[in-house]
Length: 299
Image 1 (cartoon, one colour):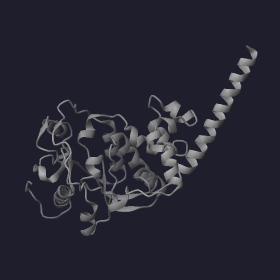
Image 2: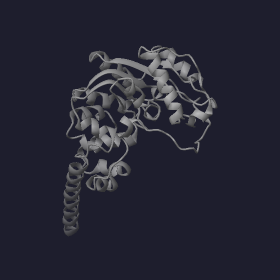
Image 3: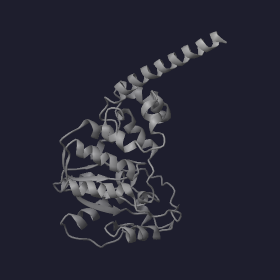
């Protein structure tokens, strides 16, 4: 029995030491990458100056064509992240401010994301290598139910988020394998001719007063950033489109562009415009909010 107890203790010590060593190796390698995704790019860059920054979910990432603004003389970047919620968007904005980004205008896509305050696991994974190094990230996650495991258990976060920051990511970072996350000034065009699902049902979504949206508004106010908040197009074959009206009832400052494009030819899927549709929509935003001729045309 005594021998078994000693062996168990030895095994636990070895397991802890191995976990700690792996945690250190993964963190050193992965956290030194700066151009594989938008989160790490913001963490590793300082003193950037933008006339216009776009933020939000995939409905920002795929819908705001940065080049259209750049062609009009605006320095712009699309920091929309597919899968992200306002939870992560608020954190990313906090990191920009901490890193002395100067932003004149923030165009925020906030429609479907208004209905929840939960984190997105895929986007959360991108912040995890920095949770010990960055106090802002630590504070943002400290109220999460698994914070203590993520923060105090060596290598736990790399196991939990293995599909994003596991061995494959370690290898790709070490091999300096590039991604397209920062191409096109952050805009990701959907150009496939094959359409996705052209039906959707959002009737179960419940509009709430979202604390992370409130955080974003407060950050912009404190840093003299002009905030423009928009809802982006959804295909006509969607149940529960009155959700967008409910969002605007709760937050009148959020501009509803859900039906500015209704032709399915401009959609890659029910919730995402294709590249041609995104160009039309971006021009609508440009003309509506940036002192150009206003448009009321629908497509």
